[in-house]
Length: 315
Image 1 (cartoon, rainbow, N blue to C red):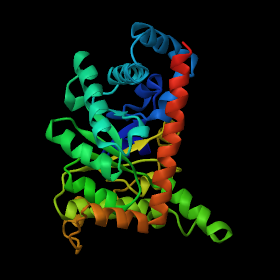
Image 2 (cartoon, rainbow, N blue to C red; image 1 turned 120 degrees about the vertical axis):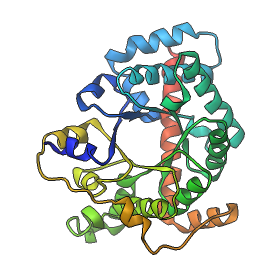
Image 3 (cartoon, rainbow, N blue to C red; image 1 turned 180 degrees about the vertical axis):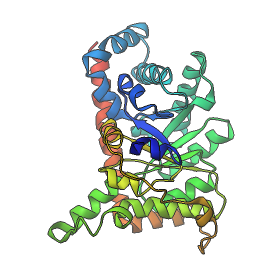
Image 4 (cartoon, rainbow, N blue to C red; image 1 turned 120 degrees about the horizontal axis):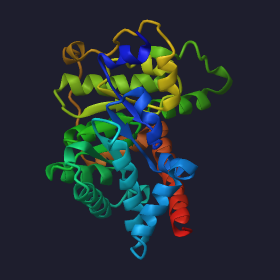
């Protein structure tokens, strides 16, 4: 049995791509998209007709409304391939605006529902800022499920759990990137691999906290740089993995044992933790890595959203 099938025995495998033609070969349950992945997809010849049709059908509408139509068009194609859920992201430029995030999330869900897709098959992706988490709490109360992304700090995970968010996406690879860059020449790749990888440790801490305190929020490790990070988190609720790393898992028959265990985590001796808004903001500010990577991630997604706007305006 190859490693991908071994992993599927105890972790839900999610494909991290906007390239829906690649999905079937990996048989993931869910799929995630983001502005960068959609931008990459719309620039490929295979997807040009879908983009052109969608833009033409909604010409004359405000740009942000047309963009949402494009995001949902890709989501609908993905849902024809995966049996589970697709994650569709709210514009990152709204990351500090709760009201605007709520409005965009409700519109995205309305578009999916108009196409006959139930709320149980869509996750609205929102950056895990304080404002984004407050929006997600309100959306969850309305039955609109959310995937809180760009999550780098423990305080973000705690606040999402307290808000009753459906799912979080802690970023493994970007945490690894930051620590490796900070260490410079002193970085020891072998010593910081597997369970010692700082990104892996971050996800494991969140997973253990959730299981210890009975928090129902799903943990989906994201942003992987290598197979070792994935195998070190085997047993996590979900892992969203790029097509390249999914292929690498398919190509190996090496044993892949479970690493994260909910029963063991439930018995862990851990303190209860909660954050109000001042406490959250201080804790996030106190975490240099998380502060830098959250800001960097929002900026990068905003740049790619603006590029997508430009492509759509040019059609």
